[in-house]
Image 1 (cartoon, rainbow, N blue to C red):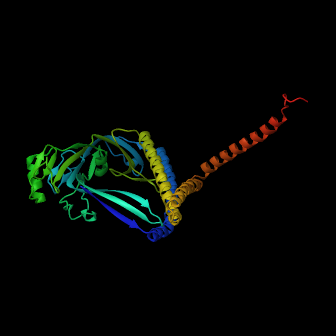
Image 2 (cartoon, rainbow, N blue to C red):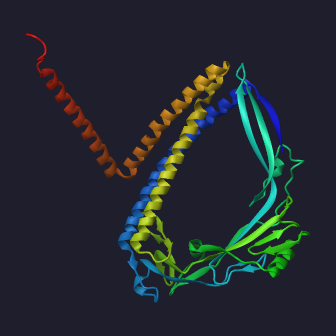
Image 3 (cartoon, one colour):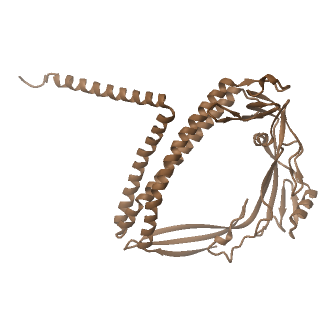
Length: 395
């Protein structure tokens, strides 16, 4: 089920958009400069805090609390036991012995997809042909049908209930107490079997006129699973179980809490199973490196978009003659890439000098020495080549 819509944008309307880009583009570039600078500082501070923590951490036995370690950074591992039982009080579902319980809800509903093709017209305008396609899918959240182009024919009802997650407040690791949500996040998820009595409780809680049927690990709210209707629901649960875990944090009585390093960064590491302090700190450093590179790429991409917005007005002006506008648009894209590749690394380099002055200066010095060495070798090689006699030429 689909329909097509054709819209026309005048050159003056596009020019207004270009002027907006002329204002917003520099702001976006400045925002990315701040993001890249902040990211380098965050990365360095996290690295230093982890190095500090790795040098201070003390491994302790989980069977008893040693008051001599009060306020110190400790590492403890062993069997984990949740305190209490996670429960979905709304639907009356529990997971005995688990650290967490997750409710997954999907609704069968209309989904709108669109694809557009834009062509430039003489005089700088644009003609856009958009095709809207409608289909029914299972989705974990309600798709707002009021934004559809054909909303009257494709309406989605409200979801009577949504997905949620429930965890125990705390768990014990031997004599120590740890955060229950953290433990649940370390657990392995497995489906919860649902019985007919659970279906009855869910039907009562939802107050729906549609029947609720239990089928193994799924509750179906609707008349026919094979022929679903818009508004039908699928509800399932998973439980998070964990046998052993490892924690690194500060000892506060019997609790393990976040440790504040000398630079103010907090350290609270956790892992499923038994892991050594070295393994946990290595994993944390790897995660810090990954986050640093992801933010770098994101910042550079955002900077590129900012430059594209800033320069877009040039191609819009040139679009009075479509093929000229295409050439200018390609050129401005290349310029945006060049500016990004120049400014982005420069910002990162300056941030390195600010946050890692010794390392940054050492790298710059090595680069200067290498460049000087190459220039010296090239200069010495040139006279030697010029001084060689030409044996093939008669005197």
